[in-house]
Image 1 (cartoon, helix red, strand yellow):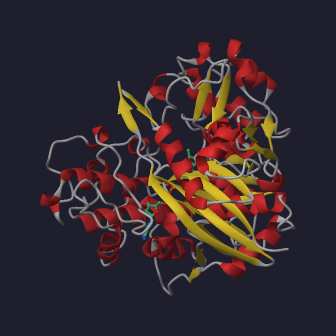
Image 2 (cartoon, helix red, strand yellow):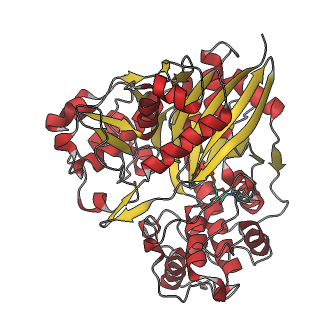
Image 3 (tube, rainbow, N blue to C red):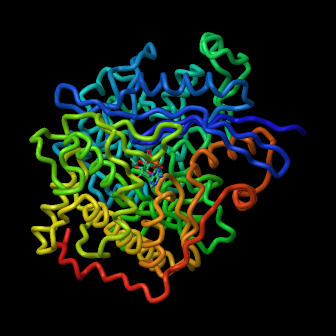
Length: 515
Ligand code: ADP
Ligand code: LRH
């Protein structure tokens, strides 16, 4: 029983990474071997993922990983590629932040969609994107992003369960495609591939891929929780069941883990979703607009250049950042540094100055749809504050403070709702993902919730990914709780107690309009 090695391919909306885990009896060691920016491209008025660039990043990462006992792939949810009948990709996958679903969504009433799937209302859910999809008539197969990468590696076709649940086409109870919703796709009903479950072997590498990567042909790709949030929640180092989690990156996915879907009118109104988790669990959570707000501020400031070092907060160049690619974020060595064309926006320095600003001077409703599309986020935040009679953040530090304060309020609201809707006791809030590095946000979330926050691991998603592979391969055994115990033992975690006497104002104080 020596050490076994597994590669996690984790594709986030802001960056992709390949992590190698060495797993021995009771030990888990991780090493990031490759990281690349995930930069969407606008062309002909549509916002696309640069899927071949992403695939090249995956191949480079797997080459750097060297021989492994398994490869698992996860990514952001809902987006897909379409294949023709010969297996060729029909154009670039469209980004879930593209505007096409503003004009066209599924005809099925939301109440019925929720009753069948348990999935919350999001205009970008796959079922809605398909209603706005012009390429459907030529498509033979739909593959979600991790399934598409797995297909290019192995030639095998399937739809991994956890990510399939985010399409809003899956029956929440049977965990198979909902036959009525699938028939609603009309002639395209047959494009949905068979469901595969986390832990199933997808297949060995195609010989030509193995040769290109310098890996043995027998190297297997194993299905994991291919929805990044499913792997992240599996990677939460919870000690018992009394926890809530925040998977905090581009989005904050805030909720609790359940054994069964909970489909209620109240949950529907509160926009809580029932996504499929590992081992039959349900991720009962709300999508909170997360560090996207900060990412877009930084991108805007990078576009604006150097003239705006600290004040004013809004760019003066007149260039619309929506037309400029998302900045190159984390390099393997400088994770978290927003380095734009000028490389001048330093996230950690900004957060330090934000921490010195007056708390809760102004705050925005992070989930307001005005913040969804790429664009000039500082201007939108300023406008929101102006419209709601709040002081407009007039320096970068104040703008960042406003974003972080707003996210802490949104975290509190979602955790309160999750507790109220499920009756689940919550003693600890776990924050995992890149946002667990944001000490200010972790601290304010602890204060707002009045609960201790355990921050880390940063790479919970990759950890959840490799542990599901390792268990399928026999290198570890046990329940999700056993896997979590392994994480707790080996990973650096930081605990933030709520500060004594901290007062976080109620959201009503900020005068937001009802949505
Ligand atoms: P995704 O998977 O959605 O691409 P990540 O989980 O990688 O997102 O999180 C990325 C975010 O984490 C960044 O946008 C940034 O706000 C935050 N982050 C990363 N590194 C740091 C850091 N050193 N300090 C503070 N925040 C950080
Ligand atoms: C986070 C995430 C989230 C989805 C969104 C589209 O990366 O997968 O769970 O809702 O991207």
